[in-house]
Image 1 (cartoon, one colour):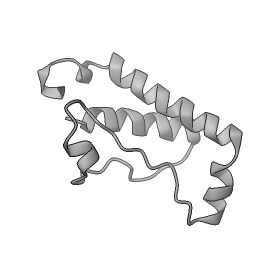
Image 2 (cartoon, helix red, strand yellow; image 1 turned 180 degrees about the horizontal axis):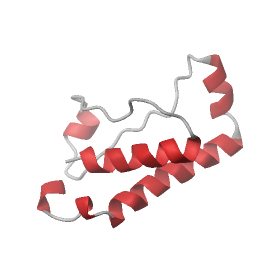
Image 3 (cartoon, helix red, strand yellow; image 1 turned 180 degrees about the vertical axis):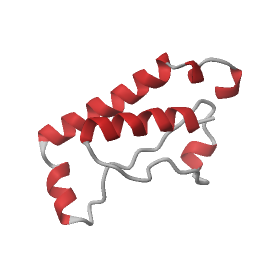
Length: 88
């Protein structure tokens, strides 16, 4: 299941970029539903929102996002929910 890595990444994103949102959703998406390993699709921001577009073009914000995503992956890999056949 991809629920556990999605939750770990969401928690790290909230901590790392200090934004909240309803980020963990279950949807029928080819990229996540046909993966043979846990898969997460992270939408960082919408380019149609001018303020977000400016922020997304800021190197400091890009670094914070990248660090938060990486921390979420580390959190997942070190969590007990990543162990066992139910998550394969």
